[in-house]
Amino acid sequence: MIAAMAVALPLCAQQNKWAAPHVVTVYCSGCHGVDGNSQLPYFPKLGGMDAAYAEKKILAFKEPAGPPVDELLWWTLKAIGAKKDPGNVTREERIHMEGVAHAAKPEVLKEAAEWYAKQPGARGHGGGDKALLAEGESLFTVGLQSQKILPCQTCHGPNAEGKGMAPRLAGQNAEYTEGQLVKFRKGDRSHAPEMTMVTRDLDPAQAHAAALYLQSK
Image 1 (cartoon, rainbow, N blue to C red):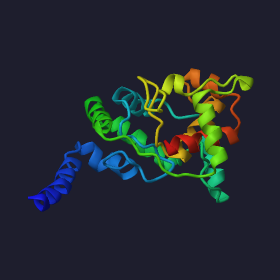
Image 2 (image 1 turned 45 degrees about the vertical axis):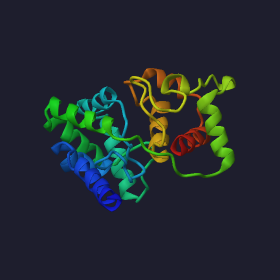
Image 3 (image 1 turned 180 degrees about the horizontal axis):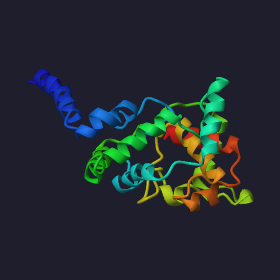
């Protein structure tokens, strides 16, 4: 009886995995995984992400692309063999997301967002330098008054679980989180002006510490 249950559990998990919507298994899973647990560090983990927030982010890829100078910079960096900037995905990766956002019907995108919202949130991992993790924890829980940096938990929840349109950050890939903070500091994220204000005085070392701490949650 126990042996039969042990066999049934993995089969049940496998069936649930393949119960994912078509758009998830065919398109989303290549970068984000069927369960939202992306193994590629520069892509976000989507498991447990609020569905309304995820849907809004997908639809944002329908917005016009950035100015031509961004594309020129990308080609220049590619020509000299530069590594991926942590604040950017490659042009091909963005085009892929834009293609899905434009091709899929709104109800299909909603279905994908709701699927990922039902998946378990990412489990913390990583470890790392204890001093950096402590610095990141302090920034998250109490902020830094001398730099007018508010505590992240105010909006994202005490356990970084997310609150409404403030996304879940717990267990998120550090490289992805750090890249997003780069974009906020540059003012490239018009959908969340409050984040631009909060992060404008956050230096790169502090952003790195916060991202490592969140990955460990």
